[in-house]
Amino acid sequence: MLRTLPAQPIRTASGLREFEDSRVKLRALELKVNPIEDEFYREHLQSLVTRRPS
Image (cartoon, rainbow, N blue to C red; front, side):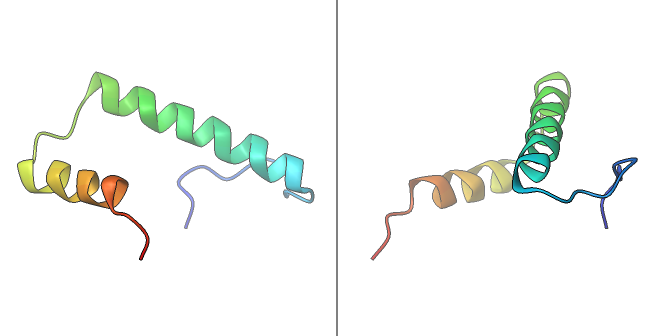
């Protein structure tokens, strides 16, 4: 379930992209202001980012 639903249904790829971009920017700002301090979480995310496809 989305925390914030758009006022109008998303009907196009560009509309979806715009919606997702705005939510990613908001979450990035939230994390900058209030970062997650859990070491396991940080290491886990780093492993996902640096994982190489087989």
